[in-house]
Each structure stands twice: as structure tokens, then as C-alpha cells.
Image 1 (cartoon, helix red, strand yellow):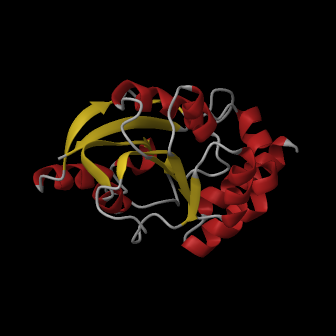
Image 2: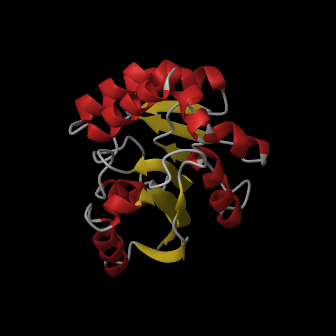
Image 3: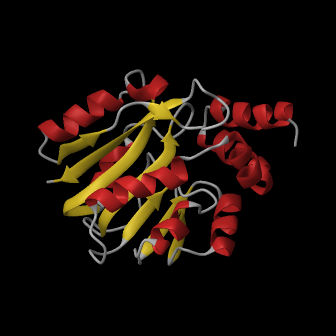
Length: 211
């Protein structure tokens, strides 16, 4: 696919204003997503493993890949010795590709920002890469992700620079801390989400421990 087509796919995703538009954008992009994002040097599904491995001991219990897309992160965490990995995503088309790739014990279609179908404290940790960005999951998603993580477990995720403050993420971080829901553990320096293209797309990784 040409660079212009790649740009159009990215633009459709970033321009989505509703859950329906976002699901449609990813359904249209699903079959070419992995090849095209790899060409752009998209690294977040892989580097998120570093933060998981740094903070979450193996064998602690199930992990959730929130916004797993085509399922790139699961197999790499599996290669590091992590089992019991589940995934959720808004797009059924992306979940079909994740299912074919393997690496997940279960896959669930669900939208971040709404209620999630797991009991309180179900997961030892949840992680999310590339989901908190323009036109994607809102900061309010962190309430449910925190709820389904057990006390002492970790919520690990990246946030795009352009929504960190304007999207209410800093405010949500502080609110959950003030409410006694979690404590901050680590905040990375800004880094590029794409190693080859899109040099202006910067993100940070955040780690919180659930109280």
C-alpha cells in the first residue's frame, strides 16, 4: 500500500468521533493493519512488554490486554513466560486476527469507556498500548480498568501527548489517587510511538499500583 493510503488509514482512525466510526475505521483497516503499521515502525505493542515485565512477576494471575487489536502483544509476553493473557477490543475484525495469531486464552469484544464484563479484582494486571490517543478511549476508561485489577496489581498503559492534559488524563490520575484507588509507580519520558515515520506522535508510559 502507498504512503498516501497508509496516511488515509491513520487519518480515519484519528478522526473518528464515535465508537461506531472508530469500529468502522478499524474494520476497514484490519487486513492491512499489521503490515502497514510495521512499515511505519509502530512499536507500542512490543515495548509495553518491558513495563509489564519490570513490574508484574510471572505466575501472579491473569493479565488483560485492553485494546489488543490484532494481538501483537500477547505472543511476546507469552515468550517471556507470562500465561493467562486475555484481550479485549472494540473491533471484531481485529479480534478475528488476534484469535488466529494465538497468544490469548480468551478474547472479548468490549469498548473501553463503558462497563467491562469482569468482576472486581479479576486481573493481576491490565495493560494497554496505543489506545489512549486522539479519537480513542477516554480517560474515564481507567475507572473500570482499575476496578477489575486486584489490590496490589498494576495498571500499565501509554498515553499520547496531545490528549494527556486536554483529554483529562492527568486529572483522572490525580482523582483516582485522591480517592485511594491507586498509587503512581512510574512515568516514562516521552518517546516516539513510530520508530520510522510520524516523528511527532509522542507518548508516555504510566504504571499505577491498585490500592
